[in-house]
Image 1 (cartoon, rainbow, N blue to C red):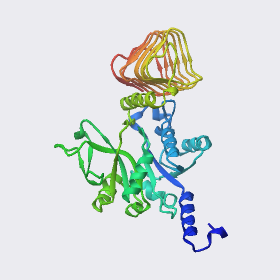
Image 2 (tube, one colour; image 1 turned 90 degrees about the vertical axis):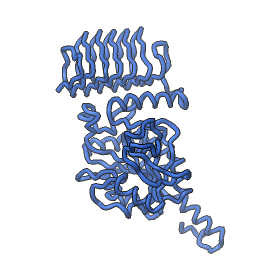
Image 3 (cartoon, rainbow, N blue to C red; image 1 turned 180 degrees about the vertical axis):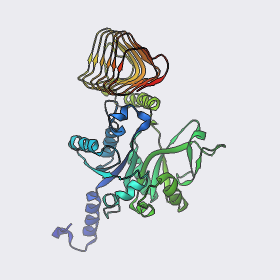
Image 4 (cartoon, rainbow, N blue to C red; image 1 turned 90 degrees about the horizontal axis):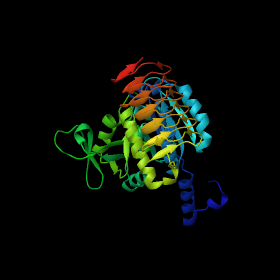
Length: 386
């Protein structure tokens, strides 16, 4: 901005300076990586929740790719669990994504607002540019550009993404007017007041940081109601799919919705072949035997080996898994490097942690198996195998 051509006081030069300032603004985002991920155990015993594979890439990468598409170049990860693993992720993915990724480590859980105060010096660079805030276990169609446009057009202090639900009585409902201005929040209403709920993605102006103390704080309960009271809180309604994938059943439901989305908008990314039925993702390095029926709603990750005559539906097969001949798996998540014996049947939302070894001819129904276990007997009723 010190170019001699722009030091004059003409209207054109002042316009050029403002344009350059706008171009040079760095868009930022903060992702609430969260804590222990207990709802997704046993998977989170081996890996922080945001790094668990979803549709063959870490959950958080889906969000980062969407942020990059919206013009974000710097992402802050608010973490308080396994920071050394997250640093390894940063080293691997910074270059792949072409984004600057930094960690803001909490010494104690800081809720959903406290991390913003902790990262204030990064998020507020003096430019006045708004920033995104995302919960790490939300998967959706990410209308981030549209949210940002609404935020700027309304001169909002904060803009939240909302999604419609069939039964709003189970949630906290966002009540808004016809222009999207949020009037109030109603927790689990007994009478109908609206059908839109908080989807866990926000655009915030730096001024919102003045409302947040450096302590464990909820942005939804302790910050947004005050912004709404000042008529500065707006909502943007999501028209695409949405799911909080923080627990196994929702994770599998989220995969279904995500693959449906791919079928509509990026069908070339789905697998093709005589053994694939419906929406299936298959990594290039995976090997699939003969006479298999794979699908629908299946993801098979890197370096998996699928034997002959295998049947897979509504399931996730994480990297390095081996499934032997004539096994059927439905509504299950199979963790990294596990091995499933021949002529076996897994169903009922089984979740196998890392490196679980299952013998041949077993029936597992709703089994939750911790990492590095060997299963030699049937588990016919839902149970946790310690």
